[in-house]
Length: 289
Image 1 (cartoon, rainbow, N blue to C red):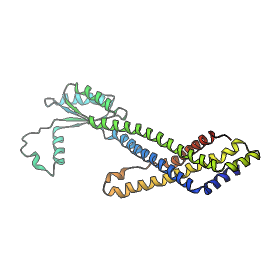
Image 2 (cartoon, helix red, strand yellow):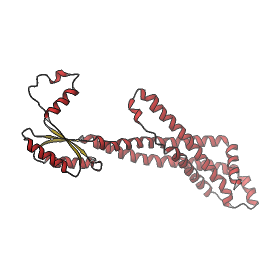
Image 3 (cartoon, rainbow, N blue to C red):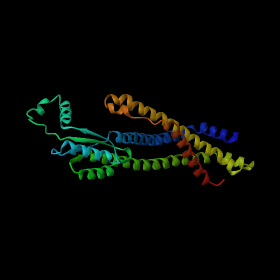
Image 4 (cartoon, helix red, strand yellow):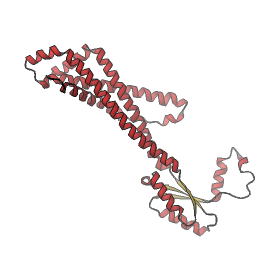
């Protein structure tokens, strides 16, 4: 087993320029995959936090008595989709509005009576926080006696859901396209190296080498190209993350909340090895030995 590894490393050192070019190309390709996964991972984290912040505001009719208000609140709390319900009186709503507009008190000047309605803030269970489910629940609550209107940020929920689906679809397309590019680069490199070592291969074949023995160094070489490309891609991803969170966050503080998935540290070199071996196998498989 020492010959295939020794032959692969010798070939990498002998044909260093074409191998360096291949490694850089593989690294750039895997870096594109990393950027896509990085964006998708943080979007997934953001969407997972949505249920915790998502709420529905149910406005009550002004003519409701205290007992009727209590009945509506109790009916809302009994719904299977509701995780919690908080009653907000007209006075509490006005006080909260005053706190919000404390820097512009003139906005509320001249108000003789409280124009706000009492309401109930509903927190839905995580499994029910989707655009379609929220719309269904909203329609059902609107039909309840004593309910004036329901607001739940429909456009926000729909936009996040649509963005998440679009990014997932685009990510799959990018991953497949870039993976094919990595396989093609490895395929072309190994094929060139094979023809440059044609005389050496003929000699070891005359000495009784089997096809598998001849192919093994090229498979190892393709795997090493993928491994080095993936490792450089990880370094590039870290530099990108550092620049994004420590440099650009001075201008855009929101970037500090981005998270780098540590799984990429192991996944990217592994993906590089697999794609490198696949490209080498295709290149050697198409040649007669």
